[in-house]
Image (tube, rainbow, N blue to C red; front, side, top):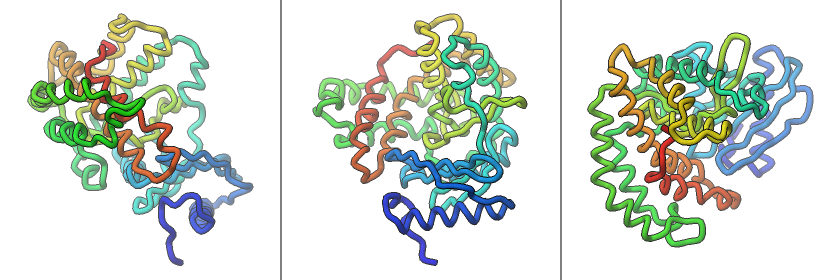
Amino acid sequence: MTRTDASDWSTDPWRADALAWVGDAVAAHGHRVTGPVESRVRPWSLVWQVPTDAGLFWFKANNPGTRYEAALLAELPRLCPGAVLDPIAVDVERGWSLLPDGGPSLRDTLAGKQDVTHWARVLPAYAELQVAVAPHARRLLDRGVPDQRPELMPELFDRLLDDEEALLLGEPDGLIPELHQRLRAYRPEFAAVCRRLAEVDVPATVQHDDLHDGNVFVGDDGYRFFDWGDASVAHPFGTLLVTLRSVAYAGELAPGDPALIRLRDAYLEAWTDRHDRATLREVAGLAMRVATVSRSLSWRRALRSTDPARAEYASAVPGWLGELFADLPV
């Protein structure tokens, strides 16, 4: 059978091809699809909720900019069993994956409560995942996961600053020229920050880059991390930028709140066998600063699409880059 274009989601041939793949994958596990799929489409991915006689399964098709997520979903269960969902099927070439239902998310569990106690357990568990994956970072890079290690970030930053179309330079909701010039002037200091990150020997590993309460499943046997479409191989501590900001937002906590400091330190504990805590705290701050550029890069990848709806999200690329000079959570 001739394969359809892996990202041409709107056509009948693509839908028929994907439904056949899902049906075959479900059947290979001794189950069957029992009803029509429910769809959610974004410029970066299509997700189907698939009813089966074994419960809900979830199909995801990534666009070309985030297709590497399928490779991560295939690799992570082997590298850190129990910390992620075991996929039912993965097609790395097409960026397709089929996963079982993960149960309630941390957001569902918290139900709007201002409670950081879960995060005090989630972050050390996530740090363990990163430590386990670090020796295999080269394999992830070979599988197409973006390379955003500290030594490469100055060049990536330069290229991003040259991408005036992605930055919407001078347009409404885009980067204003004055900030663009300030960012250009900051390049030597940014390079120095990256050199310091590379100098302290914290191995690069998978960095989720969008770890918030909507991307963590809560189970009786612990936590599982999902939605790796923004991930890269990078300095691990960059994760703290989104996580601590989301915790601060949900809990109405000001930057530097003692609760945020405790969460940061709980996360960093996984590296205290190699580095003193003062150095780890310093490096965490630098990594969060660099992660604002990582977030801009991940949004630019995600919007590598011809979907007209991408315009709705395009301001995220300049928006995150503009956060480079903003206050950090801690």
